Amino acid sequence: MAKSKGTADDDVVTIKKYANRRLYDTERSCYITLDDLGAMVRDGREFRVVDAKSGEDITHNVLTQIIMDTETRGETLLPVPFLRQLIGMYGDKMQAMVPQYLEASMAAFRKNQQDVRAAFEGALGANPLAELTRRNMEMFQQAAGAFIPGAGKAKDAEIAALKAEVAELRAELAKKK
Image 1 (cartoon, one colour):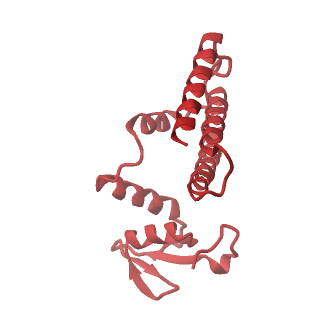
Image 2 (spheres, rainbow, N blue to C red; image 1 turned 60 degrees about the vertical axis):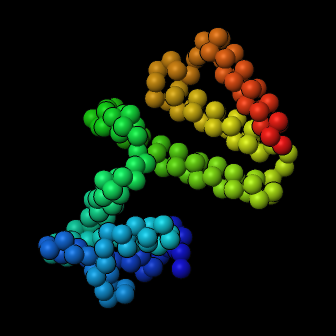
């Protein structure tokens, strides 16, 4: 059963990681794998991983390890330019803002993903994809303005080109209806 982010600490499963790299689920009283933890994340199940000896919370490290293992198996989600940019943000003056920005971006992406699904199910009005395109353009412009000085003040020619591109996308979407 999926748990929401606002669950009480009692609803957070404690996973103990032992020196032999084994993970123990204290709720089910069994050993589990990183793949099991990945499934728990996808199911919305809240958990925290602690070092069995020291009691230190190592959830961040284990979640990063799950991403690395998944990426190593060829299921790449993070493009090289993104990884380079992310690494470049370490030590930058804006570093403290990156986690909140990434969380907000992922929340917006999830929302758009849900909107697209709903649109295909016929739940939305006339042209939902055009609206999503418009919102995405606004989000990316705001993001660029926050991290690249002067990016928010694009030249008139660039703005005209973007407007033309949006118009073309709208026309293509209208044809597909």
